[in-house]
Length: 110
Image 1 (cartoon, rainbow, N blue to C red):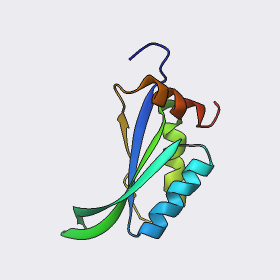
Image 2 (image 1 turned 120 degrees about the horizontal axis):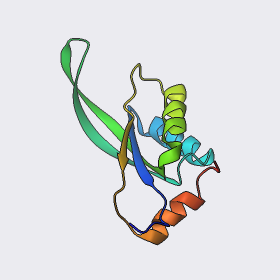
Image 3 (image 1 turned 180 degrees about the vertical axis):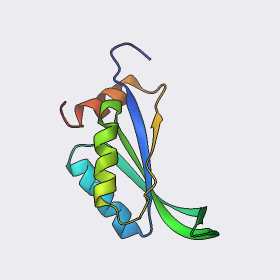
C-alpha cells in the first residue's frame, strides 16, 4: 500500500433485526465514525447460556480509519442492546487507493 494511503479497517458487528442493524449503521455513518456500512443477513451459531444457539442475525460491516476503531467500538457498545455485542476489527491490507482515501476523507477528523 502506498505510504500516502491511510490505514483502514473493517469493523464488524451483528444485530438481531434488520431495522436495528440499519439504525445502528446509519447512526455510525451520521457520526462520521465510518464512511460507509453494509448490512446483510447471516445465520449465527454460537455458545451462549450453556448451549449452542442458532439465530438469524444481521451483519454490519463498517469501513473506517484504524485510529477511529476504539471510538467506534465504544459507540457500538453504548448503542447496542446485546449483553456482549460482537465487535471485530480487521485491517485492510490493500485496496484501491482512491477508495481508501475516500474512507479517510468521509470519517471524523482527529
